[in-house]
Image (cartoon, rainbow, N blue to C red; front, side):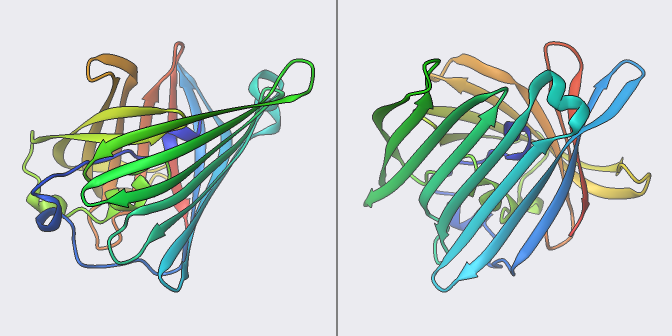
Length: 254
């Protein structure tokens, strides 16, 4: 479920400085409702809160998501993501995902190091086995250029100058996710008017994401998101496909 809140984005090369805007972030807390849509059924299934705090030279990030009581009976989720990014260049410094999903426990921890334009992610994974014991595994990921994870990339996405992205332009990306690196293809589909959960209408940039691993194999269905056209660039609405139905995520306020 948390994947649908984390709007993955660009691994830019020479266009990096020209596409990003110069603004930074103020302390904030964004609230979302996660809904399930299948035919005539459209029911609130969970809530999520995303927060950012300025900590001197870094931003401290947190995302907490949980399912509603009725959804707990089918698939209970209590996930927390924590991260830190450097303010001056938006480079990711650390990332943790603590997941309690359907009675299972797992934790991913990534720490970053940089040498020139090369990035290394040291990943540790913790998983509770059926016997209740915690197993550990490690993996090191490598990439060239700016690198993000499933949390820090959310804020990088919001700093893009979307007026510089022409409709139909495609950009490739790489994001560390647990013990793997994913390639994301990002396409801007222009501006649209959308209706939010409270029936209000907002103008938004329509962005589409495609996910692959190994450069070719599709790792999940496409995700569409709509981002506000004002200076905050808040993700307002997101749609992702499920085996049956859709998950829809709506921004509900600050």
